[in-house]
Length: 421
Image 1 (cartoon, rainbow, N blue to C red):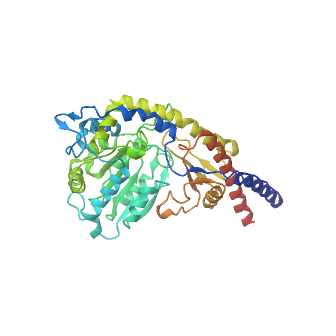
Image 2: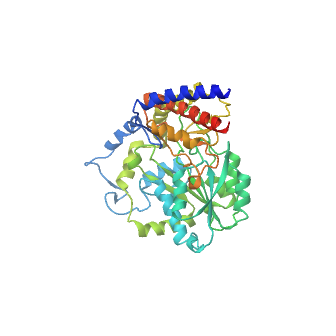
Image 3: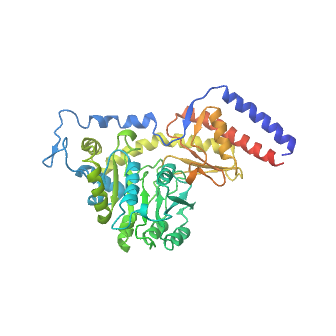
């Protein structure tokens, strides 16, 4: 386009944008929040136990204290979800993020497996695959732990960089991973990446892989991605102490009333159990039993997740179809992911435009995840990545939101191009 054509196109888009502003929209695509239809599927779980249910099982009254590390029924279910033995599990409350925070806190104040507490070590660092999960980065920021960006590839983190840093720098104490349908890219780590993680030889004895397998059973298509079992691989090389695996039912049943779990080696669990024995007398066993009775077995849980997938797929398709209609897939101005599962679609817009796109959308009534949130310190070096969360809005709302989003992308790019002429 000539300069005059760019100006005319900008005026046309501004007119369309103002039409959206006049609609006074109030739509939210900022978080991976299950929609009401998904939550409705889990409502029968509330009837799995009631006031007349016998809650004395294995000669233990589940209404009382005891079984601080979780009841056997829920451990059996999580062992299938996480691919570990029940004895390797500790069952927590409703939040796996809370358990991640607790592990970091334990490392900071008391250390793991006899290692010096991190608070007494200097210049400690974590590796952060980017774009990644903002709440992971927030935990590190809370403890003033330095964060190092690690580029994500189509098969997972750049393992050459990970290996070089981990095996040569004893100040690096961990790495965050969302290995299946990663947040926000929707990538599942390849077998080679998982194997390379298991074979790492860290310079720091207290280096840990935080394997946040939040979307282990969250496929939205007939093709469920395969993820190699990290704990099994680590057993081959005697590196089990290097791994913490996390999961929860937050996006399986009710996010505010789910069950979370951590899997780890005997050595790590010993330290974690010691901490929790001081922190709590035990978590909600009745809620654990409610989940176990409702699903009965792993197969029933997978059938439940297929129902959730049928609700989510049309929403993901709506977003991807709108992007495909409005932009060429090989456009220099925008690209996007097409995940088989998880909760997000990652969009990369023209460099220097992400904040402007998010700002334009917000002004017109559509809230997106803040630009930069998918990077440590909230700094996206290219100002290009935007995370879209299609799960909560209805299809009608998504159509409106994506129409606006596409206008905002074009407008932001035009503004950027015109400013450079």
